Every structure is written in structure tokens, then in C-alpha cells.
Image (cartoon, rainbow, N blue to C red; front, side, top):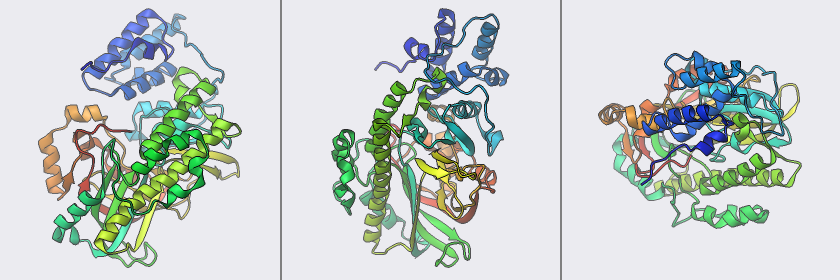
Length: 484
């Protein structure tokens, strides 16, 4: 099987036309790829950010891109390797300030991506959450408010409407120890993971009665796929797990303080959302020509057909993602013969029409960020062996009413496979009394930032109401490659 490679054409698309520079970039990029230091997406994203502003990379001691950055700086002083502006839209020359939570734990690439995003001509405000790390276009953990009629598919994310859902049951938390086999079997019987996973039995398919499924050709063509995958969970960091939820007195209306059995799930809009993202991001990049470092931040105009089509599809993907979680939770609740006391849920890959504190109407993109408006409930998970939290938003204007969506990755998937130790992972899970079904080394707890550090960095954004400790975790089998 031919090994993955970063091609010269992909590097030229970043604006590299000088032959000598191209050779150097190719050598470094493919060296990092060959040795599993980073995956292809991360390498290209770093190179885009470096070409835009090499100085942060040149200043980073021992950085993988330090020599390339120094070469670019030297060449530009000689009047060489001048960036090719293949754009109809230039970026703003002045870079607006944007607040960053947990700055000391955020990689330079994510900061560089946010800096580029805030320079978009349609950008109004931005913020970076403490779990932030590099992604396509907008970093994961990035929040970007744009003009109200501009929406950026890659700032929403590939897994549109990826979300959290928590069901709290009137059963004591100790059930995870006394009824472990029964709870494991409920996950086995009522969850389905994998790229091609489909559903055999349905609880509620009423969403598919909606007329929205016939509104555009793209949606119509994807309806059967969406129907087949209703109630499935995909791959990567998606999970369904049982855990112990500890609630403080008066934290959640109508629920006394104590320890409860709870079911937590994380997944999105499956192949439907992924196909929508792929289709409309390509249209956006065709319609909105930007400099190479910003090309994944191309937007669609909501005043035009393609913008309206994406808006309709994105919102339908949001309803569909919610229905996926409800299928899983309702099937398990029915098998348990017990309705939950309450269900809490939220998106963290989506765009919302909102107003800033000064009344400005904007489109708020939260890519891997949790809505945290005043009084808004949300869920911020940790890892498979570290706690997650039920939170209430404080409505912080500087964060654009947002908070982190989790702990955030500390290392890439390829780096996790290369550096982590299977025995250490197993010992960690044993120590935390975690029963794990599926998953692989790239989702190990050590691949993520310390959730306690992340939460400590955002006390002005959210109030913690309850703590969820994972105990019985199901994820995709190791052979499955991440979708997002």
C-alpha cells in the first residue's frame, strides 16, 4: 500500500513557487509525516500559518518548523519568496485583539490560525478557549463572530453539530459497580460505532417527516444515508458511557444533591453532516478567494442561494445530531425501564445568529466551543478516565458567550501512537476503574490536556454544577479510522 505523502501541488497551493523553497518545505513536511510526528492535516495547517507569519515559529526553541521559518524570513529580507496573493478578498492589515483563555497551554499553530481568522474582512470579534488546538481554518476551540450574513463552513466544522447529551437516572451511582455487566450489555445492544455503521431498529423516526429533507437536491440525496445511520455514533473521539454523576445541593432544579447513575454521549451528524460540510466548503472556497493561509476560512453569503442552502442544511444537521443522541438515550432508557430525571445537551460545532453586547447582529461560529450564555446549561467532558462537568454559562461578553468543549488534545493522533505506552494506558484505566470497550491509543487519557487545568482557566465563563466520572466507556473499535 502506497504511503501517504504531501505533494508538491499541495505545497504550491500554499503559495510556494520558488523551487528551492519548495524542496525544503517538502523535505521537512514529508519527514514529519513519515516519522508520525504530526498528521497531514496538522502539517499543512502549520505550514499555512508559517507562511503567513513565520516569526512565532522562528522564535520557538526546538520547533519542528524553526529552520523553515528562519529561511522564509531571510528570503523576504532579500526580496524573495514574496507571498502570492491569489485572492479577491484581502485580509485586514490591522489585527484586532482577541482574548485567549489558558494561553500558556495553547500551541502556537492554534494562535496563528485565530490571528488569521480575526483578519477576515467579515470578522467582527473572536476568542480562543483553553482547550484550543489546531484544526482546518478556525482552530478547534475557536469562536468567531462574523457579519450576520456570512457563514464559514470550516469554522462550523466537518462534523456539523457535534454535541453532548447527558441523561440522569434516579438510580444510585454505585450501580456502575453492582450492575456492571448489565450496563455493559445495554451499551453493546443499543449503540453502534464505525464509519459505515447503520441502524437496524428505530425508536423515533419522526424527524424524517420534516419537509426540510426535500428543500434542496443535496439534502434529498443524503436523506437515505442519514436515515440508515440514525442513532449511530461514528469514530474518533465519539463515545457513549456510563458514569457517576455528583450533584451539589441546589445545583440542578428538582434534583436533590447526591450521586446518580448517568449516561453521557458525544457524537454528531455522521455522514450526512460530513457530506454537507465537504460540499459547501468547496463551494465557499470557489466563491470566496482568499490568501492561501486563509483559504479554509472562505465564507458563504446568506443573501445568496448557496448560503441559504448551507444554512438550511446545517440547521437540519443540528436536528439530526440531536435525534441521533435521543435514539441512543431513549433505547437505553426503555431497556432500563426507567425515564431519566432530566436530559441536558448542547452543540459545540455550529453557527448561531446572535447579538454582541453592543447590539451588533453577528453570526457566531463555535468550532469545538460550548455555548455559555447567562444561565445556559452545557456539558464539558474530559477524557475516558478523567471527569466531565455539567456547567451553567455566565454570559461573558469577551468570550462571545462561550467556553471550552472538552479538555482538548495535547498531542496529535499520530504522536499518541508513536509516544504513548500501552501498559501505562492500561494501568491508568485500571487505577480509575474504567471498563473500556473499543478505542485505541490515540484516545488515551494522556493524549488530552488536563481537564482540571482547562476548567481552572475558565472560571469566569462557566459555573460547575455537577461532576461526571466515566466508568463504563464504549468507543469505535481500534481498526476504525477517525472521521473528524
